[in-house]
Each structure stands twice: as structure tokens, then as C-alpha cells.
Amino acid sequence: MVIQPIAIVKNNRHQVTDDFWGDVESEIELLPHIPAEAFNGIEAFSHLEIIFHFNKAGQSKIIYSGHPRENKDWPIVGIFAQRKKNRPNSIGLTTAELLRRDGNKIWVKNLDAIDGTPVLDIKPVMKEFLPKTEIRQPVWSIELMKNYWH
Image 1 (tube, one colour):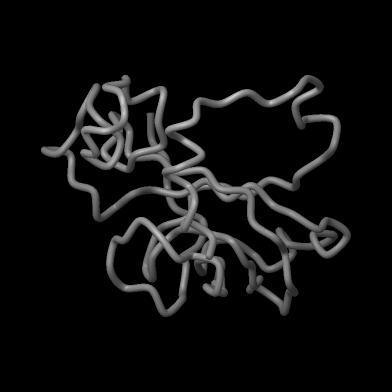
Image 2 (cartoon, helix red, strand yellow; image 1 turned 180 degrees about the vertical axis):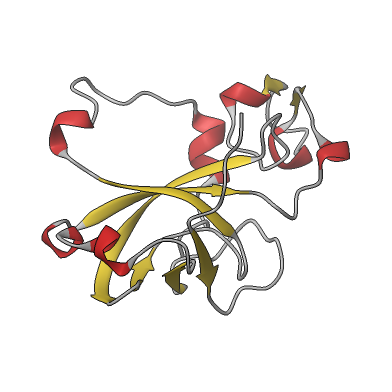
């Protein structure tokens, strides 16, 4: 399988950190081999799913289970029951709010990717793809996310 980046994230977050992403505005610029027309029509959508590569995570740090954020007050859970960056394929996914577009660039809010992060794909959020039933999650995950977007 060969996956090539289509864009790069540009913002003021240069370190891998877990919280306080709410004020971060990110520019996503298409790479030269992707024409600007790939963004045509994107302005009609309010939110986008940004799929990106955790290029700073490092393959040697992969975990398969553990306490989220190494907090022993929270249960040991598998990697697929948390959103930790140290994943087998180092892929991140975030639903971001589209702010604007200019040519081969878009600006988004609520994207938790640091400056220089390679973007693998961008998809518009459509109601028909959102959950039809109530979203359920454990209490520890709500505690973990308390300051994430502040």
C-alpha cells in the first residue's frame, strides 16, 4: 500500500501536546502535485474530516494497550478504545470546522495536528454519515477531553 500526502498543516503548534487545541487555527495547503480545483465546492460544507499522519509519533513507540495518557486513575484499554497517537498505522482523524478557502489553501478550526503534519485525505462531513443512534462513551474519556478543545 502506498499513501502519499496531499497537503501540509501549518499552524502555531510545534510540539506534540494533549490539550488546549480550541484556539488553534490551521492552514492546510495542497502539495504542488494536487491542483487547487480539488477544493472546488468545499466552501458549501461547514465541517471536514481531516485524515493525517502522526509523523512525529515514531514507529518504535507503538502501544497496544495501557492507561490513557498514562493516568493510572483511568482503566487499561486497548489502542482501538482510545485516540492515542502511538497507533499501529500512525493515522489521525479529526472533524474540523471549515473557516475559509483561498485557491489551494483552506483554513480550519478544531484540528489537533501540529505544524508540518502531512494530510492524507480530506472529506466533507455529511449528516448522512454521522451516527444515527446515541453516542456512548466511558466517564474516563469525558474527563480526558475536559481541556482538549479549551
